[in-house]
Image (cartoon, rainbow, N blue to C red; front, side, top):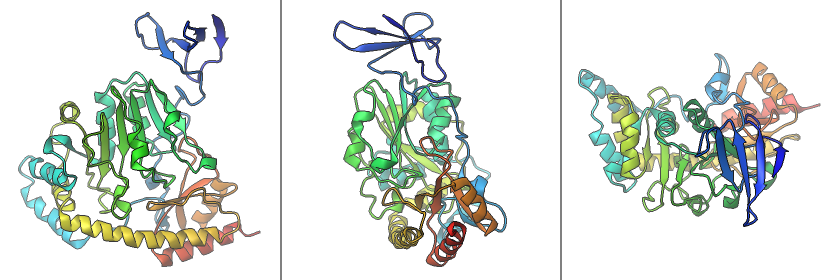
Length: 396
């Protein structure tokens, strides 16, 4: 036995022992028991700086904290300043029914029909964030893995529920692409975004589905799936993938962040277990009406047309950014935001604020650092004004 191996950050003493079959078992004291009191056993997993990582960044920092009066908002990924009039009218009409308790049946059926699923596969939630909290409280993973950089609420929810989290960090030099072989086989919970916030990478659906295993829950955050025409890599309709959970949000495309509405799609047993942990009536009547309305065929077509316009606006933003010396884009972005690398990024962000523009700092995403900025896609006039400001900041 070799004693004194370097422990992962946030754990106790690690020892390793070569087993008869040539594999290595790493045993960490002060862990949750798996049979021997005070000892946790993980096989085939060497010490890794991404494992059991403490919450070393502010996982609860989000784009809304970047916005202030007088600033042009390029930090928040909500598209538009208000819902379309037809949706606002539907929501306003629901206010006449606030005396009654919310009934999710019709909204649940509409979401199920939109994704060709059974209503038993659907749980309506107060935004995608509540879905992550419910999963964290319901599941009992022994080896939870979060693939970063990505939206930080899944990891924050797991940590708040007392779970140890291992991070798998995707690399900029590899275009933040996913290699399924990097996911530890012992992982019984894997969380990943697609398309991924903040990298704007769209992983192939089959690459994501290849992460499924018997006994593993695979959670895919598809909050931005409808920002891509036709949603080509969505797994929302795949009831055949073992252990798959898809989390969706209606707050981004429909400008409903203040209403809080999202949902998860999963096998009926997991939906039932999550529902048992959900507070009664946590989704309001106006939010349920919005879920029903946004799931109707006409609304889905509207969202798809908006995604086509978004693609044109994004292409213009990308072209302008690539023309600015000192700006590097690591990938071809596919969603409603672009991840950019600039030297001294935090200082650049502050100088942009002085010029009237708010962008999202990205150093609060695990795997990124202070020289990364996330920029929301806006109309061409806004992009042109922003690009001019950025050129002024970066010019000698």
